Length: 492
Image (tube, rainbow, N blue to C red; front, side):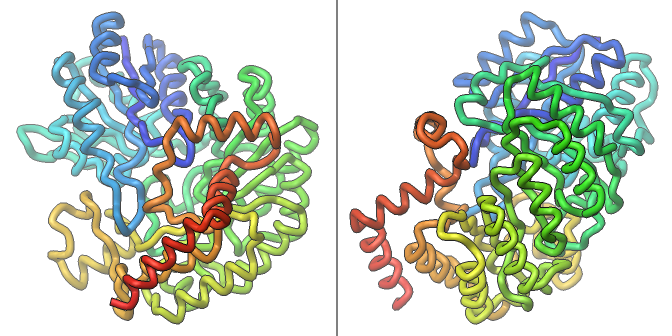
């Protein structure tokens, strides 16, 4: 069969994301003897036109659309992304193509049924698409029944008639090596220094109250062989020329032993790597881990601190404490590894006092050249423990099972007050980054910044551009003027 795979992710903050997951689906389709073409709409100036051209030229039997995000995952000023996806991608597909349009991706793993209703489509794949989508294609080609197919959501005559549990690959080592360059043009991503993503595992055994990784990938770890991961990175660097690699596990350093084996295997390769990870858990950071990260080629990390108050960390269901957060920061600083600290303020148990404690903790633990990335408020998603508790307390708290943004409101302090206090703190610290309002850097500015960094300081992480811009605003008096405005609002 002829399969057109569409990358529907057009969100470019903090950089455009190379569609590695969709490339894995493409590889699985090829291995199953299907003919595939991938249409990457990340940089498209006219999605409808590009879709029409692809459909007319390729003449697919089935279209698969990967949808990464429902929104920008913040609980204040939430940006709902699916309206744009519907207008610029799904509707043009339906206008030009009469065959099955199947949606998949991380967001579908959370709210597949709701997304089918929203897009007025019939099929969605939940879980590991390398198996679920291939089985769907086999049954569809043979004209077999699609009911009871694991991982498939079916909508018929305006009603969801099947919402199966996600299908999951038991042994990830069976999936093999995937190079995105075989399916898309990586040159546009090079302009932004976008990393190539690598997963070392799927699933998460932690119990964070707001998280949906357990729902998407399962609550047990499925680990890849450490040596095969190191081999894959080596091949990717040689074949693409890109040495910027990002580990996209929900938590990179848990299980800790598995993580260390990967780093040791990488270190033996003696590659010139620019490694980073989007998920470092402060509760599993020790001296050996940080030393191995430095040796393997880590140039920056995202540290999921979330809070600097034990009260708030408990409300978030975290497996670490304030002391762990401080210790992790010190260990990373000792090895000169730049850190983006991720904070989530406005969680259960948050008060003005815990908020102040968080700022004091992070200001103590972080370097002035670390980025403090702050999300105000918790965006509650279907399947998260927090969502289940909210429904138990108030069944009317969401009209659509948390599909459209629903935000958690702490009892002791309003989100509006949290926002103002956090903004005031940010104006006093140039390395603070307010995710809900600072994520709108124009792509052109980001591309120019990346070019200048490569020219003058190639080993610096891209996000330090934000700190430089804020320092410029400080010395020109712009931050002082903004602070006056915020203080005035707080007095009202």
